[in-house]
Length: 98
Image 1: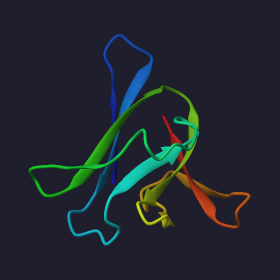
Image 2: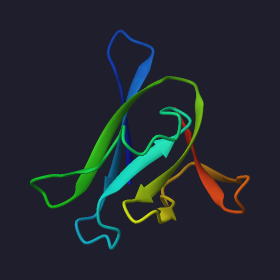
Image 3: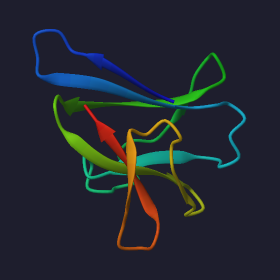
């Protein structure tokens, strides 16, 4: 799940990426062109409602590519992405429109 919330008086959006508490991937990070595909920057945190989430502040009106990466190196996509596009590794990136 992906939630977007505009930030008052700014041209930015708070985007919250959410995974269910029973996801099978272990520790996960969201990586994309907004963080130079660095899996150390935006790691999911377990919440009191038993989901995992991470929030990223992004500019409004932009297009971003992203994926999720598990600690074991497994890459996976979010079913709630706005679109998907092929990447240079033979897989597909998620596309997020803000």
